[in-house]
Length: 311
Image 1 (cartoon, one colour):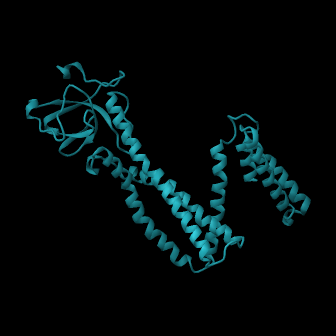
Image 2 (cartoon, helix red, strand yellow):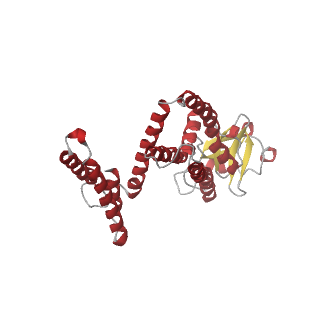
Image 3 (cartoon, one colour):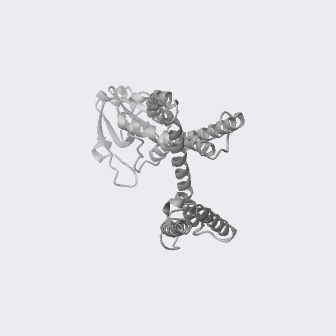
């Protein structure tokens, strides 16, 4: 029934041969469910089973279509394509867990999974921030990130990796229907190759996030205005730096500070204010005891420092 509803949802809004392809797919799924409904002896026989399937099919298709053919209602195409995948993963993992709980595997699989997940979560919690900082020349000590945001970044990175659950799920479903033999080398190689391809694809999708975020911050800094995008607890903002010592005595690392212009800052370490030099695409470290920081005026299209700071 899920495949029937998803096929109808994907067909909605398409035209020509593609429309009829999805209609035939939905109809085929419904016919298979109709045939299986005739074998539901527990609900009262062949007629009752098929009647229940028909009613359920009408309900599912109606819900997935939003009860109309309006493209703005019901499931989107992406949701309709992903839903069967989620159902397949849920079914496959339930079959896998059931087979493990009825064997001796559960005695070592559980502790092994926990032993692997703990260091993986610890590393992935810092990986995206490390890559983001590397794009901007920042060290992790120059970005004040809480443990909650590290956990959120780990979830962001691991979410695409959830596609790997398709491999054990497909294997469990294939085993249930006796499509693969226990200990078969060919099927093991096929599943291993598919798992590797999914891991590479999911990893590349997750690791593109830091570069995009860093490029967005650089673009805002070059434009001289706009709101710098945050990234998992790193909150760039516009500030103005007023020297408390003569400009010739400023001990700036990484370049020359121009006090009369606003800078994007990533925060303050124990010793320095970390700002981004848009002219040279690099960070500047300004000693905290040599400058006074104030928020920049961001109401206009371009950020600016107040008149008294420019004088």
